[in-house]
Structure formats: structure tokens, C-alpha cells
Image (tube, rainbow, N blue to C red; front, side, top):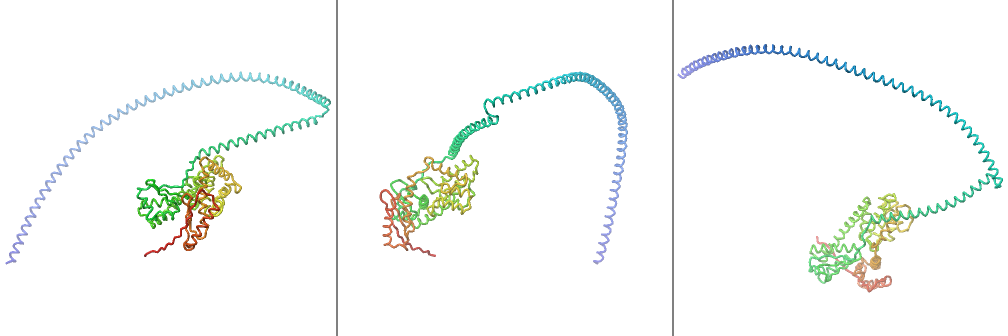
Length: 537
């Protein structure tokens, strides 16, 4: 049964498919017929449009032919007119050239006539010159005859003069030359002497002008070196903290720095007194750091003083670098620059030695420039001339010897070495720069206010106090304080015992009395201190 149904459905499907196919084929045939009709209609339209367009083209071609014939006729007319115009221009130009040639021909004829006239005149001049030459020849013959007569007369007169003077011509000539030579020798000597005086006066005048110019261009400030520094306090209560319990803080600070700390009634201020500017500056830096920190006790004081000493080393180098840059000697050896920085804290007769060295360098540079010498070398030599003063309290010998040895050690220019060795006349100057630096050194030291004799004597006395104290065995360090009225001596406790300390203070007092001149009294204090230090780890 199912098979029959399947066959029926299959037959039905085939019939339906056939019908659908037939319908679709009819529809496709109708569509193709419609398309064919549309295509035929389009073809007819295109053919009609093409015919219309070809008619228009024929009409346009006829118009173009007519326009071309018209343009051809116009072109022929224009060409004829142009040729006629060009022909008339050529004829006019030919006429102008013909007239010009005629004018040139006339000018040539006039010039030829002028040349003929000049030739005639030159012939006349030649005849006149020939006549004049004959006249000059006759006159020349007359002059020669006259010259012979004059020579004969001169010989006759000379013989007559020799007979009257009883001198021959050669003898008279010798006498005249001798007298003339003596007269000229005297006049020459007078002229030489006068020239020497003028040269000396001129040299003195120029030297004074050069020196005045150098002093005017390098003007410095007057000396105002001080032996005290003032530290400002935030309040008066800080004075008690600086003093500490039973004075232990101020005593520790004075012992470590060697500076006298004066605490008086001055409001909100503490005065640091000491002749050594480096020590005084270290004390000032340490005290200001302690005040800012607020912790003031002996251990902290020792730490700050040590820190200030390290900072001072850096500042010394900075002072030296700034000074070297100012004078144009930045290529100096770093060790020499640091040594020069120490001169910022060194005075000579109250004059700051580093400022003096800078001033001498500038003066020497100006003088060298005026005389045409090497300016940079003169500045370098002037800057280094007093370098020995930075080490004269540590090394034996004068600052001249120490400075020359330093310059040789660091292989400075021989001119610089000779300048250092000769600026005080210890050795002979071998260059113009050495003489200029010596002159600049004298100028810098001699100007008003540059140096103070009393301040130098005062500093020398304080140094002598310390030198006497340091000369004894067992002394670790010594500090002159209280403006030279007290010397504080620190001894090594392992070398000096309590009994020997008593003998030591007596021996120091005796030497001071015998070797120094001073007003009033000087207090000698020997400090023996034992410290035990260890670290907990």
C-alpha cells in the first residue's frame, strides 16, 4: 500500500514539475520577445539620431569651408600690406645710411685739411729748433771757455793765498778738518748728554703714567681685618645652654677650637675672639650649627667642630678656585689652588694675603700689557708670588724659599719660579716679568690703608706664644686666647703626668718672660686630660 502511495506521489510530483517548467519556459519566451522589441526600437532611434547628426555635420563643414576661404582672403591681404610696409622701412633705412655715409665723408675731408695744416706748422717748428740748437751750441762753447778762465783764476788765487798764509792747500785742509772735528765732537757730546736727560725724563714720565694707570685700573679696598667674630643668638636663654652645667660646654668648645668665647651683657650675641682666622671661623661655624641643632653638650660639640673642620677644607679649596678664576690662572695644579685658598685666612701686616695676591696679579698683568709682555704669565707669577706664606708656619724657611720649592715641585714655568725667588731681592731677577711683579708687590703693599704694622705685631706676638708652648716635649697643641693675655696648653697625658705638668707651666712662663715683650700679664694654663673611648656594637 505504501509503495502505491509513493508511486502516486512521485507521478504527481513529475506532473507538477512538468507544468512548472512549461510555465517558466513560456514566461521566458515572452520576456525575450519584449527585449527584442525594445532593442529594435532603440536601434531605430539610434539610426535616426545618427542621420540627424550627419546632416548637422555636413552643414557645419560647409560653414567651416566658407570661413576658411574668408580667412584665406584676409591673410593674403594682410601679407600684402606687411610686405609693402617692410619695403618702405628698408627704403627709409637705406636713405638714412646713405646720408650718414655722406656726413662721414665730409668729416674725413675736413680732418685731412686740418692734418695738412699741422704738417706745415711742424715743418716750420723743426726749422726753428735747428736754429736754436745752433745758438745753444755756440753758448755752450762760450761757457766752456769761461769755465777754463775761472779755473785758471782759482788756481792763481790759491797759489797767492798759499804764498800769503804760508800753508799749502793740504795743510790748510787738515787744519780746517781738525778744528771742525773738535767742534763737532763737543757738540755731539752735548747732544748725547741732552738726549740722555730727555730719554731719562721721558722714561720716568712713561713709567709714572704706566704705574698710575695700573693703580687706577686695579683699585682695592682698605684693610679691615678683625680678630673677633659675632654670632647672633635667637634669644638670651641660649647663652646659658652654651655655657652648660658648671661651664662644661663653653670649656669644651674653647678647648677644641682654641678660641676665646666671650659671653657678656650684649643682647642675643656671643663674641668669638682669636688671632687665627681659620680657628675662629671653625668655631663660628660649629657654634652656629649647635645653635641651629639645639643639642649642646661636649660630645655633640666635638662632633660639630670636627664637621666644621672638614667643611673648612672644602671652603679653602673654593676660595682658591675663585681667586684663580678671577686672575685667569684656572689651569693651576689642584694642590696649588688649595694652598692658595689657605691664604684667605693669612694676613701680612693686617693685609689679607689672598686679596694681596689677586691685586698683585692684576697689577702685574696691566704693567705687562703696557710693556708688551706676556700678560697671562705675568698674572700667574703675581698670583703665586706669596704662596709660601700659606706654609711658612709649618715648614722651616722663609716664604720665598718655600714658595720657590713649591713652584719647582709642581713644575711651574721657570719665569714664575724666578719671580717667586726674586720678588724680595733674595736672588737676581732674570726676566722683565719678575721685575714687574716685584713692582706690583710694592704697589699693593704701599697704598694707603693696605697694611697695619700694629696688627701684624699683635699677631706675631700671639704666634710666638704658641710657638714657645709647642716647643716643649709632650705638648700636643696650644692656643693663645684672651687677646694674648692667656695661653692654653694641651699636653699628652701618656707623656706628661700631673707633677710634670706643674713643672711645665713654670718652664713656659719663664721662657715667655725671657723672650717676649708684652704689656700686662699672661696667664699660662696647662690642661692634662685623659679620655677612654670605646664603641658598643
